[in-house]
Length: 372
Image 1 (spheres, rainbow, N blue to C red):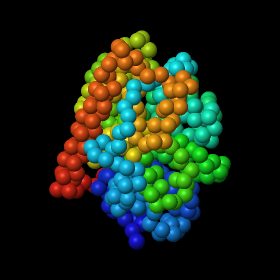
Image 2 (tube, rainbow, N blue to C red):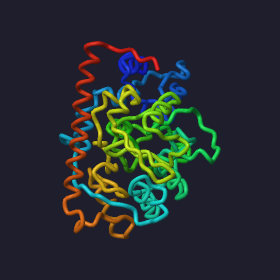
Image 3 (spheres, one colour):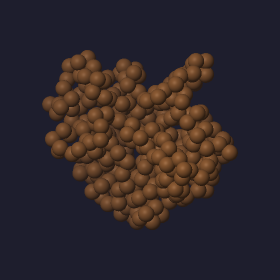
Image 4 (cartoon, rainbow, N blue to C red):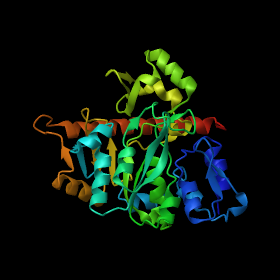
């Protein structure tokens, strides 16, 4: 049976680890906590003598393909971008949510609606811990959900942060507090690799994945990491100061919204050197195994594109519409916008898949050892 030792050899050494946190989250919550995350979010042995060599961390890794067929069958996956039952363009009707949101506030609105309906007891999200970093967090009330909305820079609050890196996504590391609080109905907001890790756990029927009742997936171009050197290069190239950045957004471009009202748009190709190495090998753009997938791409400013993938996702969206928690885009003004949005998502997905396949061929031809 293969164990975390083999993950180091097969996934970490070639540079394929996405740092989704699935292996550490499972081990910390259920077994003896042999694994931990280092300061850069990479899994490692914390106490190797505690490892019982169960092999489950190996099986649930998104880069290990032992459970691919079972996962596709369990969640009715279909090519080219997973099952799509409906495409919608929506926004929250709550002005407070909209004031926090980067796009249309759809995720926050739906999470709060599920809380109000008593359908969930908590949600695994990320929240800001400093100007350039977000961290996983188990939200259990309205204020905590609102605190997780959007990607914001705010250098005035003085909150201590753990590094000078800005990560566009963080890993799932809130299974342990979820278990300690004995929560059995939790929503997960995550990237494609995080959703895949949880779905593999669910295929195997291992705790604590049974407590994850709904998966909200994010469209993901990759996890971009901005250290001091990278930030200096970008600010010099585009003539802005980071202290003037109010919030950022990832849509068709990388958008920097300045406090003065200006928006700087940077082509994603320009950011390739800043992308986490393993993201070059990920083929999933639209969170193909989620219940609902979300992103700003394909939508007008202030709206969110939503792909409905499961009957549960469809029911959540329908119920939210019925009570007026969200509203659809005016189709008299935008008669073909949803069709165009789906085509744009398909195009972005296809591009990411082709790039991943190309990069994997190069990796097989010339193995790379990434230590960082």
